[in-house]
Length: 379
Ligand code: MG
Image 1 (spheres, protein in one colour):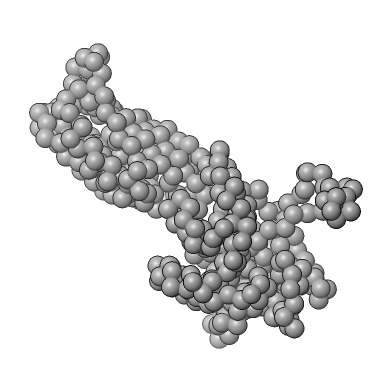
Image 2 (image 1 turned 120 degrees about the horizontal axis):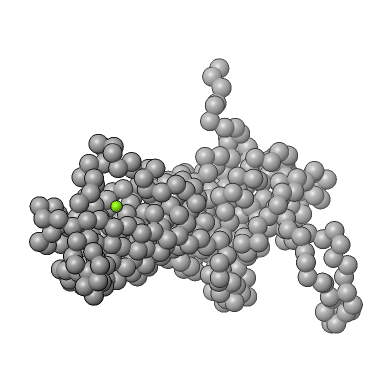
């Protein structure tokens, strides 16, 4: 019998988003955050992991149609099932539809959209029938006066997150008799199952109240910034391609590829934010493969490289310095082209242009330059 070199055993992600959202005020799973429902963000690392074979989405009745629509866009087998009256009941609904061959299950809350590829990999690689991410507790704990008041010793107390990874057999036994618990780890422990704890991530926050959405997008949580610069000489007999748009001009940009300064600056900004080598490494200037290359295509390749690193683009801001002709009339098309290549809304891309006021080689029209800044987020 041939051995399965891919990985074993067969593992499914089970994403639970069937809560009534009482503290949130509406369905959390399908609340749009950064252009997509929270449940889609929560599912992304599962879709990208080579160790996950399929997904089950557990959602509210009123979200079933939206979940089916979302599932159709997923590149992995995805089952959609209606949730139960409690979180534990919803997990059982998901367990009930798992294909028979599935042996491991990674349970995750749809309300944790910031789960990273790295955390999921850590959990899947750890051994044991029950693997749980946890974090230390730094705040002091007090008891509500209505509950007797006083303080609670925090020594040895951990905060527990999802995803939680289980052997399917254990999970099914833990759910026999339809017990209720805040998480599945608790149910597994009731059976005396050994628990493997791995480091969780502070960014992996659970959206409970609308205030948490502000925390999701706030500050530098998981955000990276990169900067890029490029300049090309302008000469007659060459095309002038800027941000994917060919601009009719007396003099065009000289370069090995199409000499698109904006795309080049932007690629370096993206690669810089990711801590990867610059574009010269990926597309060597002497390589005949890139003679006259369409830089928008190269930009798409860079975005694919970032995706493979578990990173996606947040926004990009580009400044072009070109004495003439005017860039303004082409700006909207440039933004649309760049946004499409970056996989973001055109509102997340800015293209600005200025002249060099006749100063220096840029000012005399001998060159075109571009600066770009871009942000990246963990997928
Ligand atoms: Mg260049």
